[in-house]
Image 1 (tube, one colour):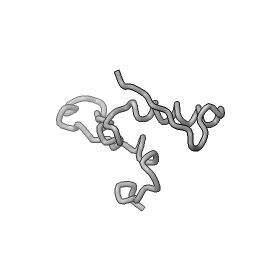
Image 2 (tube, rainbow, N blue to C red):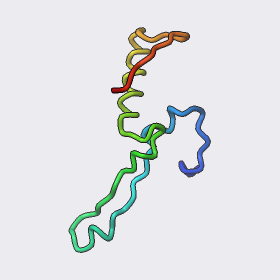
Image 3 (cartoon, one colour):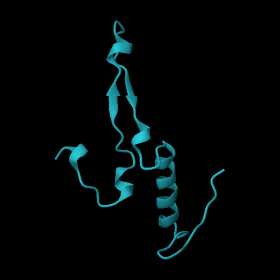
Length: 76
């Protein structure tokens, strides 16, 4: 199945599934392909989504976060 048409089980499965777009007009005449990764397609619109997910998964694996716990963070 095409990843673009996939129905995700939860929002975390969309993190890191950001598309690459060819920048062929900018790369015209260059001996390389040029592409941009559209991190704005992540749920919160940032590359930081990947980092946040990795931190949460690591904390869960270490037992620092458990089901039912509530954590409040401030963004600054």
